[in-house]
Image (tube, rainbow, N blue to C red; front, side, top):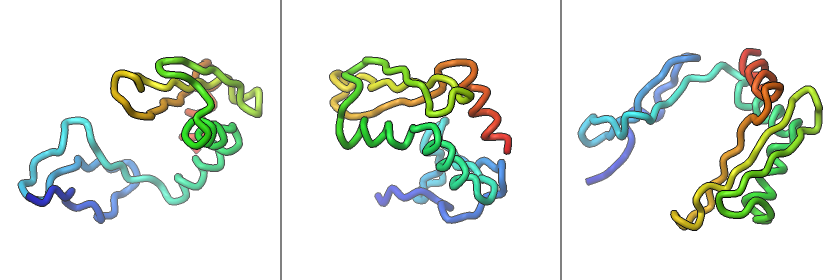
Length: 121
């Protein structure tokens, strides 16, 4: 069988959700996988925000230079602007699952508010 995703090129309106479905049978790929329509310029704005906070540089450290953290460790870091709070990175279960996945998210309330403000622009 050819396991392609159906309707992947359909343009979505901002805020519109579309479940991922298999092309060959129309079934959901999973109960938790969706496409989300974004407003024009959203991706560029979020990328600028991530660069401003140092998150893009952090991912270069995590994925290319493999500098931090070790498996299952947490790394909390301050952003380049104190108004944007503290964020964290975790290298999750790399020993158990034999892969290199990192999770980066807001750590402090100040960081969560900063991110929500950016999402609301």
